[in-house]
Length: 121
Length: 108
Image 1 (tube, each protein chain N blue to C red):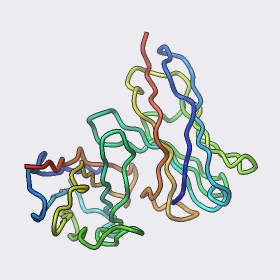
Image 2 (cartoon, rainbow over the protein chains, first blue to last red):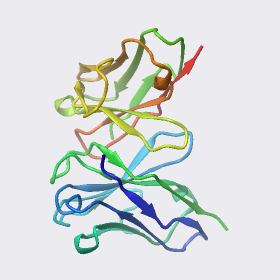
Image 3 (spheres, chains in turn purple, yellow):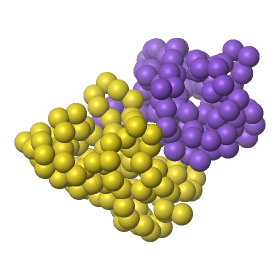
């Protein structure tokens, strides 16, 4: 079982910034594409961002493009999501998730435990 | 954007019964790239099926997926107590990769 451990999250005011982290086992980052997915409680999940195994080709949902940045540091076995210009509609539980392959196939076979981000004044 | 509509919203069944969950797409899902997830309260989703019918590692064979084009089905042949949860479908064929709103399988 692949264990993804998330940190970060919390309460932030609209317009603020937050960085989420996801610690992955060695050989996960650098071997698999990785994603961020968010979910408003009681709703279906929403794909947010993806990065390939080598850190290339980051891409984003329209709702976050230009505000969020996905990155990976293989030396630290960590995935990140930098979130800027946060809006109330960004409030959700955020999950990091592993793809099944080095280049993304866009289904998610292992998930972190999730971290709640609340954007509120 | 492909919109996925899941039905029913709630399915009330007893252990041992068969569960049939539907997921209908607003347009054809490329290569039938349709996944199913199970989610229990306070937990992350768990992958059950990808590519409409391929079970993920460790998933019991009472879970099966079928369908093509715009109509897909998840079947749980005999419900076990641990199967009562919310189930989501997700298309992984075209961007943006979208999810349905879920079907809750509750104990009658």
